[in-house]
Length: 268
Length: 268
Figure 1 (cartoon, each protein chain N blue to C red):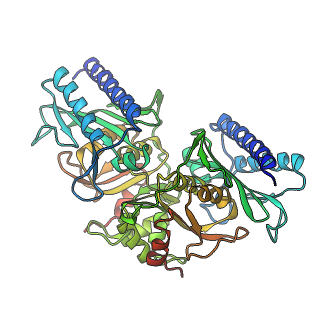
Figure 2 (figure 1 turned 135 degrees about the horizontal axis):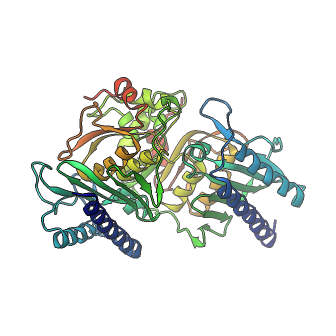
Figure 3 (figure 1 turned 90 degrees about the horizontal axis):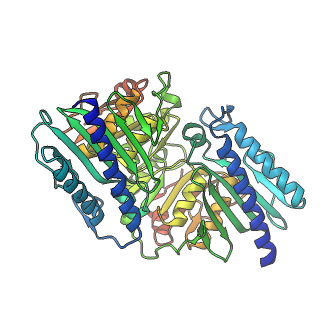
């Protein structure tokens, strides 16, 4: 994909994201049909499905050769990201926030070509704040370029985004080591939307984000943003992500990523 | 204080809060002078002090008989709230967010008369969102009245605001019981501004908020808001708050307050 073609694709994707967001804002106070998926707290609404359907139709019409991976299951089954252009979409990231708060959720669209993240768009719908990145051309919050992350940050002056669940006894990670991390950092936060939590690390308003199970659509756009500001993203054990499966995640400012991974993360 | 006098006091306090907020927004990108207080993560800036000074001067000039309790120490030393009108002020609640994020902080002003909370104002400065309450006259988010909290809420469908620190081994509360609560509720969040976290419970976008050490200025305005929507506020052990000292705090929807307190909170 040459630069001009990529820019055109970005402009189109951005227009659809904004259009979908406007629609969600228009109907935000209408009654929701809420179902659950894997467990009683894994929520999905008709708005997740409708928004996904909107993207599927647009992409199939305008880019019939592109593939799609999307949260609510309309997407293509892929064995590899190689040799294709793939849209990886979460129509509403942070559905629990969408249902309970009517804010703090995002539309997340990542576009990968031949396994490389080319375009990332994360739209905080109710705030009308758009985080975007094109590979090699920087990351933006609305029209403002995000500066590179502070290379001199120390862990004890950093803010870590982590859900308190991972400080508990749990089947994925040693909670006691996470408790040590919680006591080490300056503060912890938890916002309930993975895409926005990636964006906050890219923006530098938090410095790390740790979680034990994210799907491709939770992270695809965020990866492109984080890459553009010099942050590090790996699985929580420091190994490389596989975008076609669920991953544990450690996103962090590059100055503290290795220290967190080495000293505080012990997977089960 | 009769209703008319109280309304006038509310209008005046609200005007000063908005004025202080506008000033903070105007200078938000200027360099900050940052000091620490009780520990390296207990931050204070010249903007906390300047904003406090702004309120002190206004109140002393217009209400010379009123007393003031305020975070940065300019206030009056009181042995009792009885027989006086007291402004309880946090000029910037969520100073860590103010410093690291330049958002997610609030101005909090509570006005108590003869120990009773009469007026509560919490201003999310960067969002320009104003939460207000006058005793007996309801709570508002901007111009929209907040509905009473859902009396049929169940704990396992609730969202709890709690900092992950309290799930760790700590000197205040049994972290293991808190871990049980974290697993019981639908989700947890942590935003880093006590005043806003009170406001979110009042708004019903979260259903409980637990923390182990809040000062009068962190909670005064929030108490008035929560009272107006039917929520419960006590110390974490269920006993009555003393507004002149630091308190442990359990704020919750009335349907789940007792259950949280009885089944999940064990103070040390």
